[in-house]
Image (cartoon, rainbow, N blue to C red; front, side, top):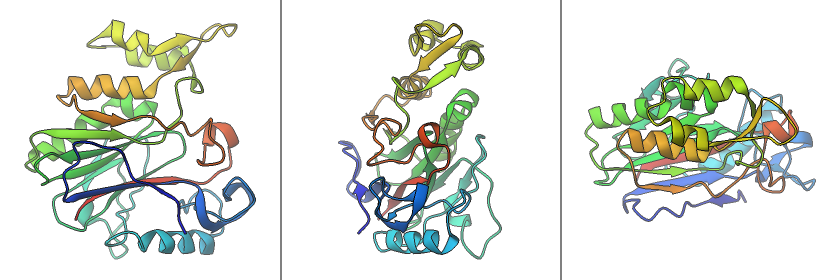
Length: 257
């Protein structure tokens, strides 16, 4: 049985459901397994896993959902699509976020260190999901997702930060630091999210959760839950590209019930 995370998200409306997967409870083998030699729940078709195993894992996940998730082709960009336009009979949608206003339409993003961010309109009318690696964060994928949700009728929005590489694991270079500092609205707060890596000149440990909270607050969202799971430091539970290189993909999903 797939092992799933049901977010601790105090302001999530009762008519909205959210889930995140772990690596446990699937059928994948090798680097895509569960970290203990058992079957892994890899959901990525693009990472070298046996496609039959990925299809079986997606079927296991589907048993917990109202319908097939709206899988998008993620490119570390800022494009947002309507999840209702994504499906097996539709052309592949290239985007890094999706929103939904119709019931049972499952917004989904896949990650293996990047930050998945789920969004819910507190009135229970609009949901969204964004794939936020450092490039997406720097370029504004969270603000773009919020803009799309508000255009669809959302007002008071709450967010949840899913499993991602933690602040003690995410080593980055000066280029990443400079990218976030360039044009920063709150440069002191941005700089505080980058700790110089002792003994490694020009390297930093970056806190993506802190950066996401800062950018969400600047976009008008102060109610943010989650951020407690580190993919890179918990090999028994999560896939991590930074840790393992060849690895599977996790999914974070949200829908109107």
